[in-house]
Length: 222
Image (cartoon, rainbow, N blue to C red):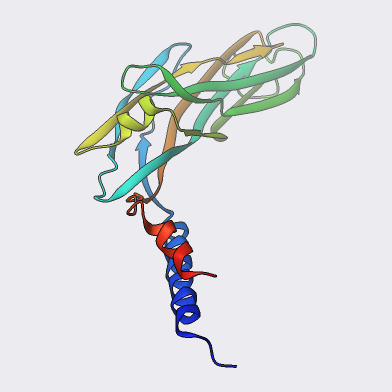
């Protein structure tokens, strides 16, 4: 049975409304940017401040920023040396650890990772030469450590930091947390670095429709 004209108009109105709702949902999207904290010097029991990582702020016309998701992939390259100069064998365990912290421009922390390398060896009695080699010593070079973490920022204050024209500079630093057990002499040298990914999650800003929209559709439907 053919549709009555009024019913046809009702169906068309509902289809248009449905398509509008689908378009709104389909408007969700993301854009990502990456930057690095370059390989730093040997920490030598201290700390290192990285050059700030710069990211473009979110500045797309007609789009609303919903969250900023950040991933911090931290790494180290570690040189390790140790020696036993005791007159008895020992078991040596070295933990080379750097704590890498990513911060907001006001230096409050966003993320922290701890790339770690662990080396363990059994050493005989002292061989008479303190050289981190031979029977009673060991040396390792450029051992890789890795750790990662991520978070999503959604507060009004955080979103405001990342929105607008220009760039945002995120500072960061690394501190040495290395330690060892069993060695008579040792040197532990982690060199820190990191890759940072910032992902903006956004959608089309919703423009309110005329207040009579639903009443008009209701009037078309029986």
